[in-house]
Image (cartoon, rainbow, N blue to C red; front, side, top):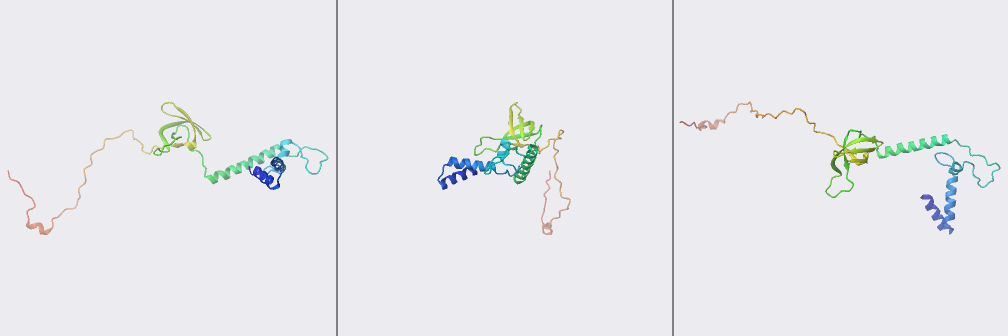
Length: 192
């Protein structure tokens, strides 16, 4: 897009045809050596040296190795991927087949939660793409970013004993009435 914008601005400032400027800009781009491969794209496309200002006596084949170009391109893409992953804080997928997940809502109202309460089981996982199935047999395909793993944080014990009544423990300290209450009767005994 930058090339097209540059060609348009050059055509406007030079009062020339934008088609001619665009063609010249694309030719210049294709003639310049590529940053990764070190070979102009035109030579890779056509498989021969391109005539520029000075005429070439012999039109010989371009001397570049396809395997070396592919290797350099692959390494540059891998470096770019690593750089972007560290910048975004990407991490490996922790969802595996057999896990229980909930799925993100596609249309969400104001009071709705982000994820639906319906639980799905992961059948397959392929590079972040999940195949999910629910209890009704409905199958969904979603990306791992649209799901959330459900963790069981309340483990139900298989043998649950009925709760026994707990008797509140009384204080073992002996309570003593204050001395000023010695003149008063504290308990009345009923006589039958």
